Amino acid sequence: DKLDDVLAFYGVGGTPETQRDAAALGFRARVLVDETDSIGMRAVTVMLSPRATTHMQFWARPEEEPTKGPQLPPLEAFRQAADQIQINPTEHHGFCGDEGTWTVRRYIGYQLLVHETVMESPPIDPDTDSPPAGFAQDIFIDDHFSWDCTAPECDVAEGGKALYRSGSRVQWMDASARGFPGWGPYGYDPAGYGIQLHWANTPAYFQPRGKPYPICFQAEEDGTCQGAGRFGLAQPVGLRGFQGMEVERLATLFQ
Image 1 (spheres, one colour):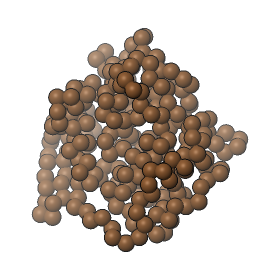
Image 2 (image 1 turned 135 degrees about the vertical axis):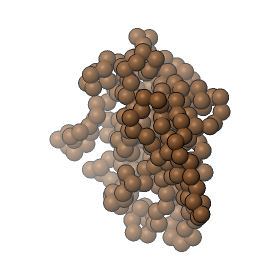
Image 3 (image 1 turned 180 degrees about the vertical axis):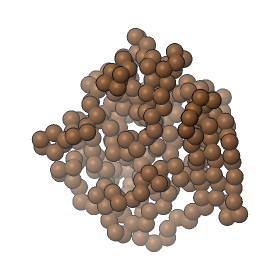
């Protein structure tokens, strides 16, 4: 049930509003292949723009909700876990140990709940020119693709606003370390899969508020990253029981 929303985010179908936002994100998509097999599994291959050198393929497969075992943890459990950090973790939720059954739908729900409880809430006005810089990235945002553009029409401010309008939360980064002046947003599509706008054009009037946390490639001496805890990089519910999943393989399987 996420596939149509995801395709609309990238500029396939949708409404005039989602088409506008997809264009602001640089997506001028064309469907190359859209096939459904005899059991109802659908695969859609999309060229994201005429100049894109790598295409994206999205899958949706029939899937039954497990009837046995614990359900996905509720929102409140994720909120409580966001108060913890890696060196002071919560106990496993039953679902995240050996008792839970993972499905694509549950993986997507888990990922979206992590974004919702760890990342900064979006601004009331998605079209603001001074959004919150955000907390440090959560564990799933680094499972993303980089969407690069140096053309003048790739406007970082408009791209960030389109992410907010789509329902994404955003972590703003200082892009100067990547060779571009200005800002670089990390957000996600309606299934929670991360996207980084690696664009060269940040208007002078656009200025996120607050401290932009650095990307943490190496922990501090106490084993945490800057911004760790509720106001930064938190550990989702039972993450240690989840690390063995093949995240990259599942990232574009949408139910």
